[in-house]
Image (cartoon, rainbow over all chains, first blue to last red):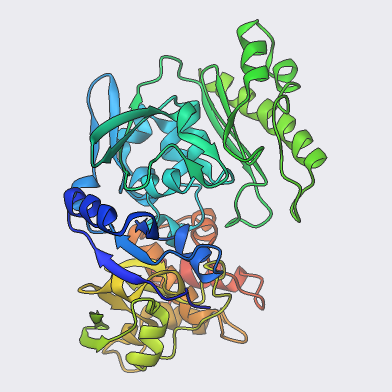
Amino acid sequence: MIPAPFSYQRAWSVDEALDLAARYGEEARFLAGGHSLLPLMKLRLAVPEVLVDIGRVDELCYLHDRGSEIVIGALTSHHDLAHASMLDRELPLLAHAAGQVGDPQVRHRGTIGGSLAHGDPAADLPAVVMALDATLVARGPAGSREIGAGEFFRDLFETALEPGELLTEIRIRKPESAGWSFQKFTNRAIDWAIVGVAVQGGRVALVNMGTRPLRATGVERALAGGAGPRDAAAHAAEGTNAPDDLRGDRGYREHLAQVLVARALAEAGSRA
Amino acid sequence: MKVSVTVNGNAVAAEVADRTLLVHFLRDVAGLTATNVGCDTSSCGACTVLLDGQSVKSCTVLAAQADGRSVMTVEGLSSDSADGMHPMQRAFRAEHALQCGFCTPGMVMAAVSLLAENPDPTEEQVRSGLEGNLCRCTGYHNIVRAILAAARGGAE
């Protein structure tokens, strides 16, 4: 399988990437590691006419501790996130979850910004940044703007990014509550989660329970009201819209969400 | 576009279509056919090669993304030893870590990448390090044994 023909353009800086995106308009897609986009292109589910390769924009590869927050360049790979001792200390949920994405080969190529901008509700990191209440920074022709993780994911493969805008940075405040957990149930190790759960303190986010990553608001409300893990987890499927597919029907996913949320809350409680 | 890749230490340059995948560049342009195309959906890992030293699935990398970089395939592993084999290849032979052999080039490259990052892995770390590579013959046990043996230098 090979992708439909396209024109390959390489950017060496954010400015150059934005210029290329402006020149080609809606026909262009940014290519980071390519591990979400290229498989879709090989299946002809995505047919961009122009790929703007940002994989060598080194100015977007960084990980800094700014005291009260961690800032991450959008092109930082899953592998680098999973192996950064600072991240393991300050944001263990993100370091751990990045080490669970795909497989080692995918983690060598895949980037946090690519995963978020792709907007796949079955991907791990969108739910993780929602549980961490991250702020995403986008740059476009009109300058930079900040988008809260809760407003970033709009629908299946659809984000708040405008055409020509590039996700450049992820900012995450250091959590006040230490308890965290990431639970993911897969068929094979490399598969997308049938259902996944990310917990940080009182925030609970779900992978693959709708057309976008969702906060489990029923669970969060129950926790805030003093419910224990098991009672709170009973609310896990509230407000969700889980897909029906070969790997699980909606009822199975709703049950799984309750089981995984209970496990996640118990594990997070043991770490608090 | 013109793509130049250092493959197993040798410069390989060619004018290719922009959509050319790295695995096809290696097989059809460089003529190195050990790297297999298996599932072609970045699931099975048969096409695993090292890109600047890290394992990648070459069916999900554009040749253009490897332009100016260095790639190693299983053909590049051969050493100066009497049998011409890399210690990992010798460990695979000694532990009978293959049957049909289709997954083997990718499996060996994933194993080399794994030990480069973690020279003394536990069995559990080897098993999770092989998440990206499917073998339908061996049940993985002998592959895991071979990688542990290579890590200990047992196949030298």
